[in-house]
Length: 110
Ligand code: FES
Image 1 (cartoon, protein in one colour):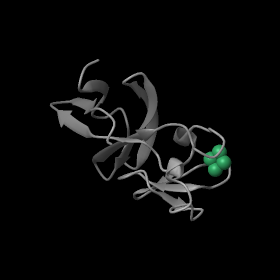
Image 2: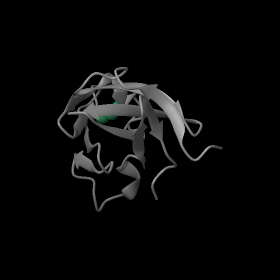
Image 3: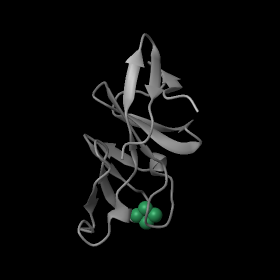
Image 4: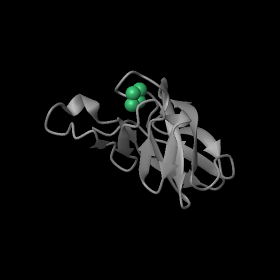
């Protein structure tokens, strides 16, 4: 498995929008927040809806199904207040870097 995988090119994901991509054998969401890219697991830990169908506002993604919210920078759940109850409700996050016009996603962060 490559350390970094190309998932998109500059211009594929408009600013303040997101789309589903695939990297490291997983479905991820690539979000563009004001020109900075973030990658996180696509499936909402509540019931498994794709977070790419949700809403992105600044660094918060909101699942459209039941409105759970997460910080795209570190995957931390923001609502409901599950932190401290179970770590499994945080999203997996992946580093992103841009090389030329290519957007690359690295291995999952621990
Ligand atoms: S499936 Fe995402 S909040 Fe319920």
